[in-house]
Structure formats: structure tokens, C-alpha cells
Image (tube, rainbow, N blue to C red; front, top):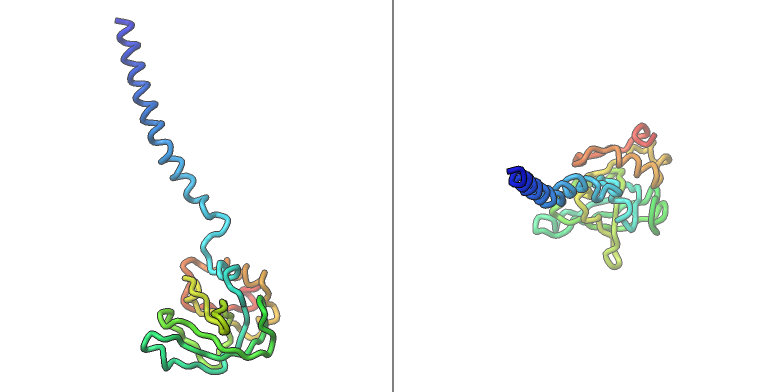
Length: 172
């Protein structure tokens, strides 16, 4: 009788251990999931390493004539400050943005553009966060550099709002 009780307990113990071993990978995955990608959390700051060029610009003109037929919006801009890449202050250049993003560029806008090379032209990054319009107050331009921009973008909520205004206070 005593042997039978030990055998039953042993069998129950074995079954519990097997269940525990079977569920361990699930438990480990559950607790490890928040750590996956923790080094690079998804924020608008993810635009910085992806962009070939980051510039503060004033929009000179826009052309939406091809946008209704799913063509890109084209625009020209003048560089007010270059944060990354080969464009220089006071340089004028053209760029495009795909129609699905729903561009809302207007002449005179002061913006931060995150761009990639498209052969011999520039286009706005096709990243989820590139849908955000990043406007800049003129008095904040001297404070902008890659570090201050990264810090400001990391403070934004996720998902980011459609329109972001970068101010002196946001950069401090």
C-alpha cells in the first residue's frame, strides 16, 4: 500500500514536471517578448538612422498635379540647416513623396525632412513615421542638431501625431 502511494505520487509529480517543461517555452517567450527590439523601440526617432539626408527646409513650391492619379507629389525646397547628409545651407533641391502618404506641403512651410536617395533625386522616407508632418519654429532652428532632434522625437507619443511642431522648448 505504501509502495502504491509512492508510485501514484511519483506519477503525479512526473506529469506536473512534464506539463511545466511543456509550458516553460511559452512562459519564457511571454517574458522575453518586451525585450526583443528593446534596444531600438519604435519611435519617430527611428527615422534618423534610416535617412540618408535630414534637413530643415523652407518649401519653395509644390506640384500636386500627378498626385490624384497615384503619382508622387513633387516639391522644391531651400535648405535652412543640414543635420545629416550632403545637402548644404542655402542649397535648393527637388524631392518627391508618394501619394499614399497624403502630403500636405505648402509654400513657406518650415519643416524637417527625412529623405533617402532615389537615383539622382531625393524622396521622403517610406517609413511609418514618415507620414508625420514635422514643422519647425524658425527660432528653434539654431538649436537643432541630430542629438536634440533625436531627444525631441523620442519624447513624442507612439503612434505619433499627424502634425508635430518642433519648438525651442521641445529641444531643451
